[in-house]
Image (cartoon, rainbow, N blue to C red; front, side, top):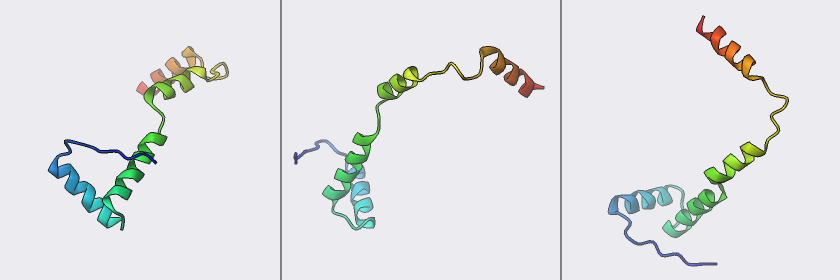
Length: 75
């Protein structure tokens, strides 16, 4: 495992993280490591955009269907 050192963390942020760690019954290190793992598991915006662009949209609504639905909602 890698060891990370984080510098220049404000006292307010550190206090909040310590409180949250205590509330979950974890050490500060274990709590922050779990939060970093959650962040790392989420896709980046670039990855999300790539997935959306790769989808087959040939069976979805047409532009005309969408415009008609919007116009119907305005009535």
